[in-house]
Length: 252
Image (tube, rainbow, N blue to C red):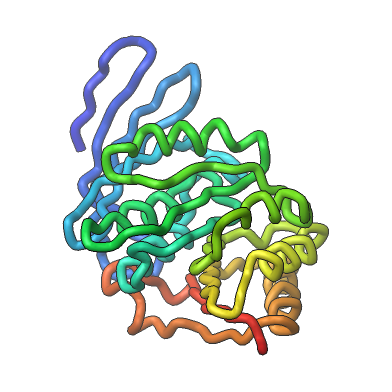
């Protein structure tokens, strides 16, 4: 670890690797830049066979929407095994925008036209989303951020204007009982007969969190077919026994 004091306002250091709980060793270059005024730092991720660099500014700590959680990292790396090039992708509860930005970076292929990525979150998180979009213009094209409060049917229709969603991405977004039905209904309204919905989440120890995840799964299974992606079908170096990826498709 190398530490350089740039001035009295900033501390910059680099880590050459990180390790998720219960995973094999993960080669990720993590560059931290702590600014005392904003308490933000930059994480650097490699995505795709061409090792495109995604830069994500996030807070040092916080609740929902301000950090890249492990379930988001696992889902983003799983996208490398999916064909998202030329596809239309919508991410819900984007937070920092990392998963959607990874999809955008993977979707840039000269031989394929069309497709776009929409990041969505509450209005108070849009500044961070747009900031990270602008930070990654060199590797991410056809990507934008929109306000979407789950359960807001008007906002859903605005997102769907002129597009047909191929992939819906949801990483660790099951937070509160009060929002579950709105989340499921929003996913239902955004889906069509060919949409693949990819949901990742990390196991939690508390009884309340386990019950919450089970309730979400039960609500989803009323409307969608579901299957869990086996660990051996996930990214070799970015997987964990306590992080799950489910694929949902609409029931006919």
